[in-house]
Image (cartoon, rainbow, N blue to C red):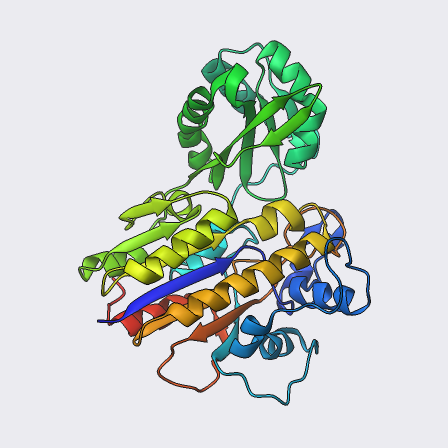
Length: 397
């Protein structure tokens, strides 16, 4: 029986979203943003040389059709288009009204978001009084720290010492529909932080806020603070049936790698594996080796976004792409006859762009193991779910 592997490179957009002008970083529209394309240009120009050198080297993704997908999506040339790809390739356009993780993943799984997300638009004093009061009550604290739009690493550096001294949780948001709460794993307690976020989530979900995210960290004011891999996303429950449900209904097994289980509130998911991107790649390789027939393995690699996109680190993003390309090449080489592997993304996060937020972009759809060699062309995010469903012979319900 066939197996399917759906791999999301979090934030690796390829430009060209037709509605990019309706989305902003600060006051600047996302028109012209192109995560992969602009990284490739920076590498070719010699301006992305921290820890690496030369043009962007992603030969395995390129063999599947990455440069062709970039050109299709945005018209940008980042390589020789005369050489035919070995894989099946296309570019996907999102219809959900958002450039965030749940919107992108739900739609990739066949469920466009049917509502407008609630956003905290004020950059300072971002949360209303009732939300602040609820956080304080749940945390047993006098007040919160932050209450603004912020970078997670920067706000921990700014407020970490005060948090450790007082126990007040660090709360922040962004242009996404999200509330993030950072706390020290030892002085505040990891389980206490997770319970705080879990207990807060229903109130925020009723407001149509997409996620409450626990952001644990360790360290001291003297040595500095560092976020840990124990992040937990408490996402609003999907309002309908998804690809994971379709596979389960057909008797298939669903493996989640990374934050997929959180994004889908475990809907239709049997097993979860978490960790750093390096650890997640090991989990993906293990599933290629032992996943049962008829199964779906759904993986998200988040560090493109969390470590490099939001921080506008072009060199770091390029290094991550080159690492991923080398590793996914090994995975492709281990696929069995009858397996399907799709590499795609959920939104953009152009590290050459202004601001620190996601960018509205099309995403690549690169396929190994497809039965047909015909290019996909411009498709919708939901068409990715249909590609997997067709391969596994499962029906959308």
